[in-house]
Image 1: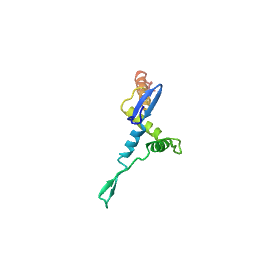
Image 2: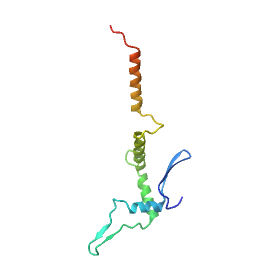
Image 3: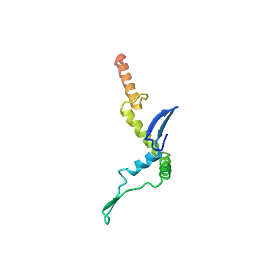
Image 4: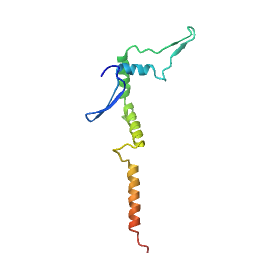
Length: 121
C-alpha cells in the first residue's frame, strides 16, 4: 500500500483491517472543517494550515487513537461501538440482540399459554 492510499476497510485473514496512507491522512487533517484558516487583516488574505511533517503528524494521531480513557476504551472502541450499532439498526445479519431474544421468548410464552390454558378454580 502507498502513502496516498485512501481509507480502506477490509476483512483479511480473520481480522478487520482499517488503513490509510500517511499522506492521505495529512491531507484529510489539512482540510478538516474544524481547522479554520486564519485571516490576516493587514495583508487581507487567508493563511492556510500547513502540514510540515506528515510522518510526525501520523505518529501523533496514532498515539491519540491508541490513548486509553480511565475505563480502558479508546477512540477505536467508540468507533467500533458506533459502527456496530449502526449495522444492527440497519438489519445486520449474524447477530441476535438480547431485546430480540426477549421478544421471541415472550412470543413463545404467549403461544404456550394459549395452547395450554391454566384451569380456573
